[in-house]
Each structure stands twice: as C-alpha cells, then as structure tokens.
Amino acid sequence: MAETRSKRILIIEDDENLASSLRRLLMLEGFDVELQASGAMGLVQAAERPPDLVILDLKLPDVHGYQVCRELRKLHGSWTVPILMLTGMDQPIDQLRGYAHGADAYLTKPCQSQELLKTIKLLIGQLSLA
Image 1 (cartoon, rainbow, N blue to C red):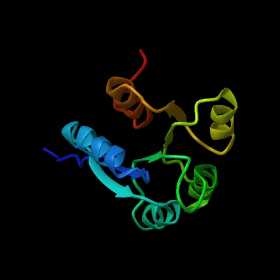
Image 2: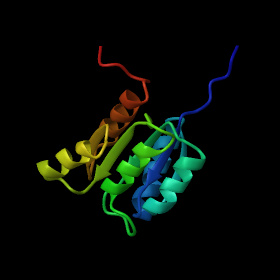
Image 3: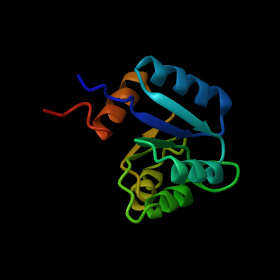
Image 4: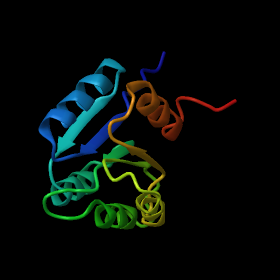
C-alpha cells in the first residue's frame, strides 16, 4: 500500500502568537507546517520547497502581502499552488484587491477554526462542495 505524504502548508505571518496557534491547529489535522515571519523569507522558502498551500498575511514587516502574492504567482512559471489570504483587512475593497493580486481565497481575522480548515481542505482538494 502506497504511503501518502502529508500536505505541506507555508504560513507567512509576522504575529508569532497567531502563527503558532495556526501551526498547532493544522498539525493536529495532519498537515506539515512551515512558518515564515516576513514576505521575503516566505518567497525564498516557497521557491526552494514549493508547499501545497500558502496562508498569507497582508500586513508584513517588509513587503506587503499583495506583492508577495504577485511574486508567488511568478514562481516556477505559472504557479498553481493555492494562496489563502488571512488578514485583519476586512473592507470589501481589500478582498477584491486580494483576488486581483492572485489569491484563491480570502478570510478575515479573527476566523473560526472550522471555517479556516474547510477553506484549506477545499483549496487542496481534500473536500468537495458536493
């Protein structure tokens, strides 16, 4: 019987407490989780080891999350790894900008754990809407 590997999620989030909480939640669900606190380091890590999904904050200390999202989309030609923006920016225009810059999903903080997990599983194909 072939062993399936755990899906790897890269979290690009500068809030250490939130990043640690997300990591714990996702690890309990069986995901491998990697953390980066800056946009630049997140881009480096994604280029070296493409994850199965990226969770991206918008307000990062070095590069705005919209720019990080655009740069992620340029990696490896046309990058198809799902990007979930998870941010405190909750205005409709912020969400529209997120999608315009390449996000596949957009959730605002604080977010219910079940909503986050459902969105992640939809994005990586572990859950269907049917």
